[in-house]
Length: 410
Image (tube, rainbow, N blue to C red; front, side, top):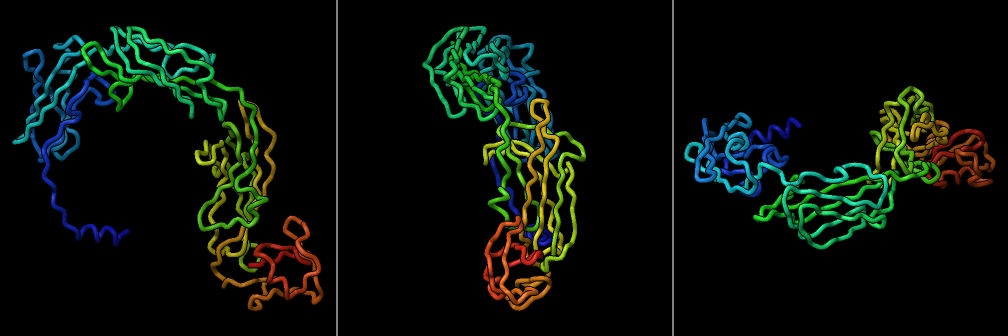
């Protein structure tokens, strides 16, 4: 990082020259709208000390206050709302703004809308509905026109034709709703191309110029299901573990809650060195548990973080995890099944060769018996019977039980 800073310091930059800008430069202006917070933003090319702002409306000029944004003298804001609050009282009045700072001048033109024409949305925006079939009603203080309406829920989209009126009613059908992947489903109703009789565009959405949008939710009845653990310890017995954290994700079809106490997770990670010798146990606590919606996997998860691999660990780790105190809708679920991983660790302190009982024979495993032996998995299942000692090295990489002892094959 120090080298990077040194390189940057050695570079020289030449500031580009550009004209002063005003944001927004034109469009519909609503006092206090979330797009501009009641102000117009101006950026000058050079630092200025005391710029001035003049608003022209109905053949008259009104001075507007300005305040600096930042400390460079280049960024300023015009309090246009305050200047016009006693001047303009009707929607659709055309106004212009001239801002001067030093040798720079910038202008903007706007359709001023002191009174937002949308008076109500029923049901209210972002509310939860009791039934999937209902009417979304948009009420205005004057007649508006719209080019169409769009109903969106998940991957379902339905378009409706154009219309006009002081009251616009959009009928929502049960078939408009997408199949819920969780207990909560949502739908969005959007009026497009909404304009007043004078052609002014209106919107209740930040960044849009002609859209009125309402969003609704419906609570589905979904039985909670435990979907398993990722990675599956059956399929990932020898999950490769690198430096840093990795996670065991307990998966559900809906959001669950965890009681925050020391019993939330009963988990132990046991580390071994490259010789299969015990190194250390790490007990996990509730601080190692996270949760939320898994966007890539499409499920809710409770993620247990397995701690960083010790510097001296280069053999394998035994990871045993049991998740407790999981609740759904206020009711505790039965304890999740205990999962166990046997994970290979990256080689560090020892050379990459096969170690058995602390002995290294240039890649050939040595056992205490000269006779053929039976090889078992760490779970106790028979892997291969009557294996000659010199053939053990040819087994797939992993941890085995031979003559009651653990053997690591790399």
